[in-house]
Length: 132
Picture 1 (cartoon, rainbow, N blue to C red):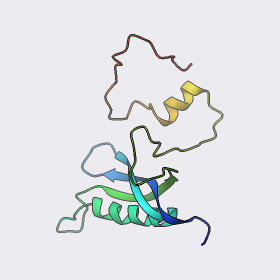
Picture 2: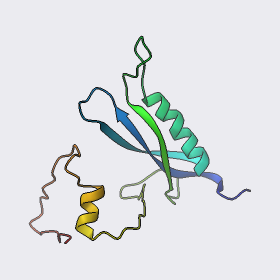
Picture 3: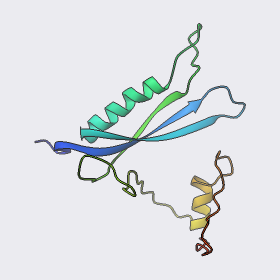
Picture 4: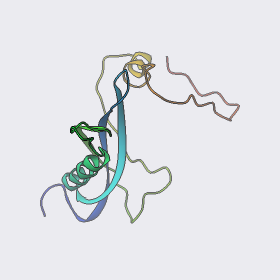
């Protein structure tokens, strides 16, 4: 058995990044898909095949009319045992070193004000601790 190759299929997730056509400002999409594969390499290869399919069709002059895969595929070994992914199973994690303080870090990488997202309002009366 070579390093990084499982005896039985394991669960992996792969994040891929796309540029969406037809928007005034560039619009990017990050997708995380879950794969059952024998190795991280196989999981990434499967994700890249699917990424090319997700790109969609081209019009008559060869221009993409679907998302353009940007060639970035980041894999994650989930360490999930069994035949299925369950509720609350961790499917992706990325560690990044930074000198930024927590609020600046979140603003720089996750809350840049250009995300297309809905603000979540918790139903609970308990307030979550805000990062400063």
